[in-house]
Amino acid sequence: TGSSAGSDSFLYKELQITGFSVYCDEYDTTVSSAKNSGVQSVTKLSNHSYILEPSSFQATLRQSDSNNCVDFPKYLFNAKLSELGIRLSKNQLELVNQVAIAIKPKNVSRPLFPEYRPSLNINPTTAKQWWQYAYRSIGRLNRRRSWAEFFIAYKKRKRYIPLYKRSAHYTDCEWLEP
Picture 1 (cartoon, rainbow, N blue to C red):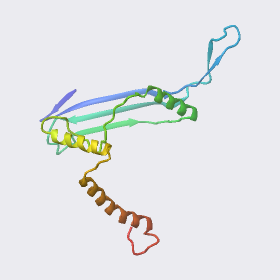
Picture 2 (picture 1 turned 180 degrees about the vertical axis):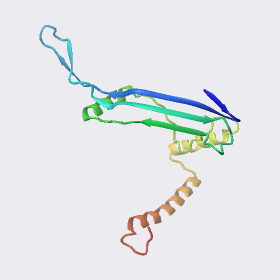
Picture 3 (picture 1 turned 135 degrees about the vertical axis):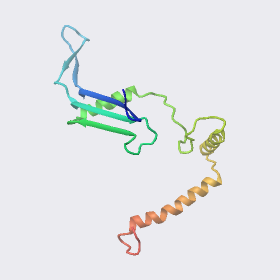
Picture 4 (picture 1 turned 120 degrees about the vertical axis):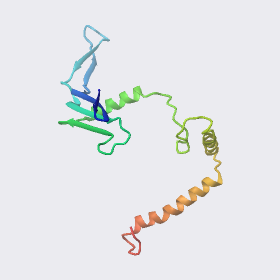
């Protein structure tokens, strides 16, 4: 909702969560050998085994529409969390890990060499940067690097070695500064 006080207007948002919890119950699955042969019997071992115990949370956000926020902040965020209880058993951790592995997408394409990748969208003005990214990536895949990359690596190494020596040996050698 928007509210106007003079020439300043604000947008107010509120989020309230009550009784939020996360639990991972353990069940004992056994194959019964009596009358129902081959049918699984599921019995619950205990009450809820909470990972995140039930808690309440309230948050409010105020955003200013003004471009010049001199007397007040552009964003004002307030949150109230009375208490938070977290408990994770080894069995729960293993089970959550198995679930995460099972639902993980199989063929996730990640960018190749993200350190070279431009952070801009592909368009005619950024085409040169994208071609440089392609060139550097192919060169790295084929183990052919440019002299500029060797020189940059050389300069980084030349800066790093004295820093490492000072960090590793400044207690033994009084002439070195940390």
